[in-house]
Length: 337
Image (cartoon, rainbow, N blue to C red; front, top):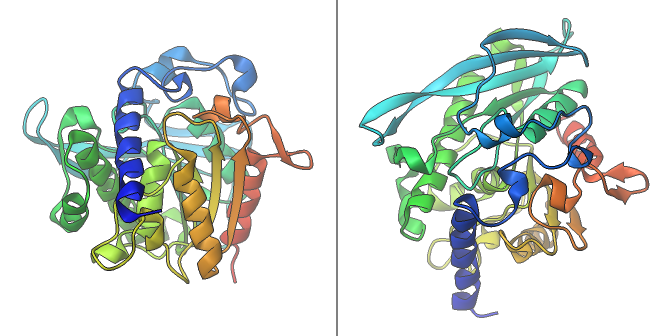
């Protein structure tokens, strides 16, 4: 494939993602699916799924499944231009195994989807994944980030990434999401002692826009001269890398994944009409070519989102679903060496 054709696919994916967020594409990332498609223990809640500003009550909650949840933690502030010029609080919910841990625990930054325009950390599917990881002994920081409607202003450290992306509001919003993820990583590292976490055992994971964000944090920043945290694994659910590599460093976004970079877990439906599956095909092929551990579940007939892909419901390995495999992969990647 010639270089220009690869980049046209990536730019088209970016446009499709924005269009989906504005009314097309999978309803799974925008409104609650039928109860049969929700994750283990999930409650189909159309209001919580449809309202990108919905938040849980601040404070600590003892989850019936043995997970302690602290909500509404401010991990930083971010600059926006809408509805007026301001800095806004960046919030996360912290999920952790209930009870006292005998050692510092690994941590995953979990990033919701929504086309960089909507949804939030209270998305029921993201909550399911956060609880599942916490039940495996992993602390989860499920973050909100600045959205396109706020006209976010990425910090100066993201300048090289902004310059490399195609022009447009969704590109700036994507850069802001990457910026906020780095802010969350800085917050976790700076408060590791208080939180009882080991920032040296860090993963990033997300779905759709969140997966795209995680992929860029894990594999693209260093190619553009941007410092990021040490990451053990990336969990990418129907994502891909959009930004092209710097001149002379390859043709496709996936080529920014290099030897020695984080292990990669991917789920993507081969009938996804929002984010092309080819982006993840290329990313996984690149991981295998350079010796980065990877696991890929390319879902036959699967669409975009948790329900359409069958993430929680379709067996992919014996009786295990892609959800089960994600939890296993994260646990193994974050194990103390």
